[in-house]
Length: 190
Image 1 (cartoon, rainbow, N blue to C red):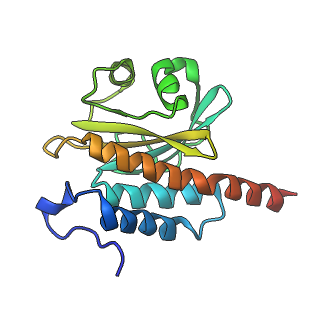
Image 2 (image 1 turned 135 degrees about the horizontal axis):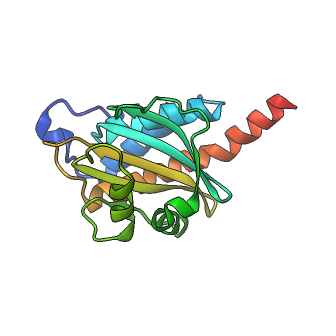
């Protein structure tokens, strides 16, 4: 039958991320992103699917390219000034050193953590911070390709460590598609 989005508020925020349910969620994401052959399309499709799966108000995909972060896509509830496909929004890893260290060591974080990465994010947030957020590395073949960043609005439940574990698995699914998509794009340009 496959994964079905939750039909009521009680099941929307906690669905027991184990066993066959977790397998169906991962299969749902694999199917949702399998058709994309362009990196921006892949990021948009993945962010949209993950926002639905994780009951997130917004989802953001940022790549790590050498010594730089590059914001690729934002979906869902966007802050003033945010756009779905940012143009040339690139900044050094040294601007967010705690985030870079955390992600490059294959670890995620929650807004409820007492970590430098959370303080760093809140310091750079131009508008009111979301009630809950988390960052998960996008990883494949031992390489960190970027970050999957998810937010919930005030009044929505906070993300949990169980949510973060699932988001990290979903980040690995996304990461597994990036090398093939990048190769396809290079071949198309040649």
